Image 1: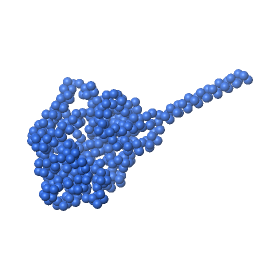
Image 2: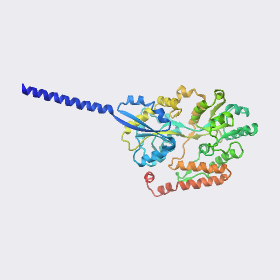
Image 3: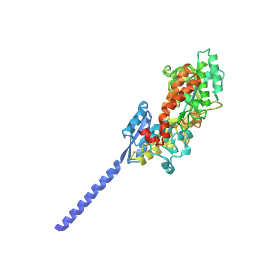
Image 4: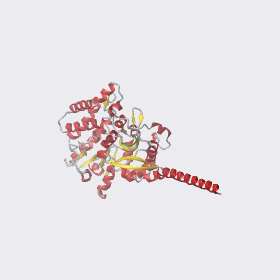
Length: 435
């Protein structure tokens, strides 16, 4: 009886121990792990409203979102790279992809695309997808897209004698000339702030010529094609169709647009919401959007936007990919647009009534099929800012077209000097950039 009691107690202890161990394992599985996700600006506020569905479908994954201010995002990412504290997955501007790929900070995604049933390359706008491919390797998935086109005053254009927006440069020039003449010089044709590079860059990309040559080793601004763009751009200011203002001198472009101080405004999709919010109801029928005019017909524009990338050092890359797949679903992209106004990167998401039936979005839908990516070199941010600064001096009358193009080339060559040295000496460019 005593021995039986001992055996009984031992059996009960074993069962109890097993129960504790199983409970511990269940608790551990239930707790799972935390996926670090960095976002830039307002996107973080919107995406948190989409994550409960993802976490419910993946109970072992908790997503912690950190919002980075747009003005500090680039420096924050570089600092985190240097300190080895990058997250598992992050939003990144598509013009930064080349830089972080060169630093070897990003995980290649092509093997995951090959197995994915949710992410299909042919459903994305071609140029948006291309911004994520560096030297044949895919590093990011477009999250939302952005571009530039014309906002215009329908009523004021009609008052100047035109029923439709311009399709090419000649028509645009003629319309702005007529606006200036018929308003007796009281109204500008367009607003193109001289401290922004987007306008000149978009016009330059319409030429279908590389802005850098020899594999991104040198500037190509002295090419005949770019000088044609620069001459057209400078001519708008010289003829008096565009004011030589910075955006600081037009602190409230929405009100100025509403007052009719200018007819055309080259800007991005966020301003659809801004004009709807800031202009009175009586003005809402008086403005619209149009594809950017090109040299000989409807033109291309710049391929902007943000992508989602997985960091190479992440210990949770499979979970990070699950999150990217979820945020890439067309229905989720549509909800993201409804929350924030960011344009979906997938064509199929544009079939939703919220996008398909909005007349102001139709020009953006057309423009997204006619975009071009910027040069994919890590130094591009420096180069395009330099381009804007030199162009501003030319608009101010300090440089001729030839002098401005020569200065752009000289300064671009100087910025690219390290790239040329690294490539010519046969070292891996990414490792040199990392040092």
